[in-house]
Image (cartoon, rainbow, N blue to C red):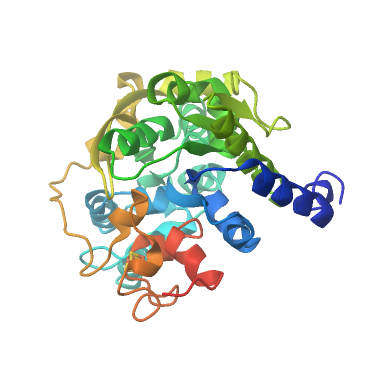
Length: 362
Ligand code: SF4
């Protein structure tokens, strides 16, 4: 298949692996921010192919995983309100909260509907004009523009019953939080391809300029990731931290201006609470005053207290990159995709699910 096969060529992959081995002379620890990268890395067995001194750590790039327990509680409470239809992407329904999951709330009678796009949520609002329809907006910069577009459409199409529980998060501030915390030493970051399609590669310039480490933005096919790692090794060996983009077929320096303008119109930057991190300044998106009538958190105010992580679950440390999922005592023994204890085992982008699926041993 054109545009895919050329990024999966085994011979080219072997050449890149050899190039990395030849070029790297000293230890280097890299983080892939994005859960999509984590799954791709495990799928191709990349960690086993690299020299032992080229280490990869998984980062917090799974939107479902970093949704805080309190925000999940709020979503479950919202779903339980009379008349409310809560619409959400699929992975969120299985995340266990302190009083069960959205899936269990649905079994108890709440009207929770899985949607595949914001258009589905708008259609549900259109068909149910007498009922409040809330879209659970979870995701990074990749999906925030579609939420913004849905809000604008609800305005122009006159759908007063459509609102959003806005839990969108921004990736650069979380990367900054990891580096500021200093819990894990990083020599470079494999930049998230989909996110950077929206925000542009220049958004990562703070990494070399302020932290002295490189960022290479990469796609998700085997050769994309290998080229990303090879470029990070090159920059590290040269001692010249910089931002590079090896995903030029999707990512530009400035990003997607149309999407950025739409986000800018609808959202303002706010503090957001991340699972495993707590509040991170300027890492979330809130609705601007002009759209406050579509903010489900304000339309349905409720007290939601912080809840503890599930007993024994170490998702927080996994998300901060300081613990491998296999170091969690519950991994595989108790926690599996069929019986997930924490969100990192639920989500298709979660690190624990990737380790489990591709056979990492505890
Ligand atoms: Fe949490 Fe399960 Fe991952 Fe352990 S293996 S950190 S319990 S999701």
